[in-house]
Image (cartoon, rainbow, N blue to C red; front, side, top):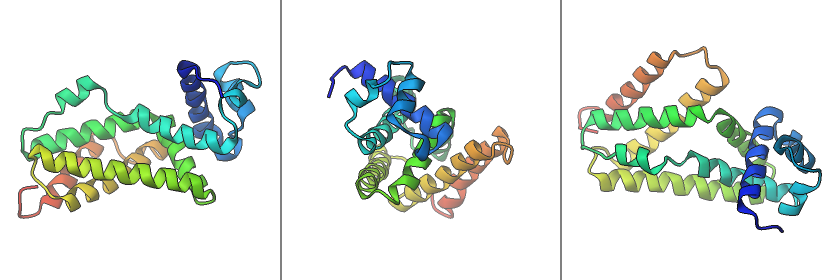
Length: 192
């Protein structure tokens, strides 16, 4: 396999676009070559199988969803509910803005029901993300427990799905209100 990281990333980005547009059945090495605008056979030099391409495309989506350092610095917690609300609004907006990536992940999740190796990779990644979100939240001093963080992540994942697949269900204002209400309602009588 070739080791040009920029070319590999471009091919994986092309795979994400193909997955989002054509679904997992449309993802072929040739389709990736065409989407990336490279000579036919290029993707096969980087990925020894379609399964490898699927798995690495999933990893690439997550890589692109990680906030940059500037965003992370702006997300410094202050320990109140307003901070939690703003952090979650930023997350929903950031993830929603990478529409093709999220749609590609949905395709990969469906494909993972038929491919144990892909299921293992995605399960590990999603579990790691959940655990890291909980740990980061608990270490930050923000109010709320592990279950609250998990429930918020699950609720917001579905909100993002609605936004990307049926965008006319909620306006941006309604989406922001739902994020705020999710935080407040999960807090109940205690400070979240």
